[in-house]
Image (cartoon, rainbow, N blue to C red):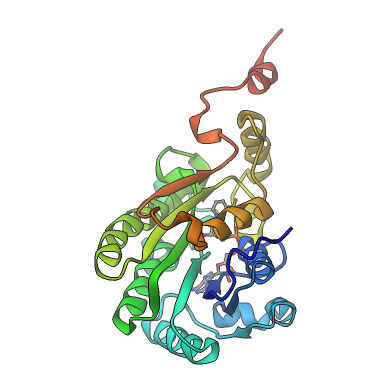
Length: 271
Ligand SMILES: NC(=O)c1ccc[n+]([C@@H]2O[C@H](COP(=O)([O-])OP(=O)(O)OC[C@H]3O[C@@H](n4cnc5c(N)ncnc54)[C@H](O)[C@@H]3O)[C@@H](O)[C@H]2O)c1
């Protein structure tokens, strides 16, 4: 059911790789709620082709951009404003990648070149997006920028290795830039800390299936799906959340506030 929450709003949605991607679901819901937007992803993701199908479904133009390249991001914000006919009202940062995780490196044996790439792709890209938008004055007053994150920024999850550090930086950027962008342009900046979700990025993390089940059995409401995450993100893009900024918002069925659940206790009980 659509509520027209984004009627007349323009946006940029990054990170839709395939139909499992959280960004893919956000795009479908943003369309349903009345928004017009551009889609963006790294040039390599374009070659995989699935995003074209989403673009057709959403009547959206695709503007390739490597989120680590300021030049690409300048082009993204400039072209998006041309295509959409004005400043944007919302931006989704749904980007993450760690070569160390991909290649199975332990946290005690990180490759530092890859560590820099993890930080650049998964965290600094958020600063680069915000700074580019700020300098081009590309986001309207009361606009909303959301990045996706994970609770390993606050608590240790051994398999999340250097992405935990990247997410901690990402969340800090939301606060630091959120303060400045709020003061100068009334633009809001938040992160949404999502449950484990079976996507390409999520599934690439060692032991994902076991951890997914553990989180599902810990959270009183169970794990939040990508679809439900998209619903939440849409509310943050809407005018209903105008005074929410600089927050890290848990969207995890209650996992982050639960010590242990009966379900998990039953699983580990020896009787
Ligand atoms: N899946 C989970 O369990 C989970 C949980 C919490 C948070 N998140 C976060 O959600 C976000 C989206 O991930 P997802 O789970 O939908 O997986 P996904 O693999 O579908 O999306 C990750 C996206 O990042 C893009 N990307 C990688 N390098 C890029 C670059 N240099 N420039 C531009 N784009 C680039 C990929 O092409 C891909 O579209 C990530 O920030 C991820 O960390 C995921």
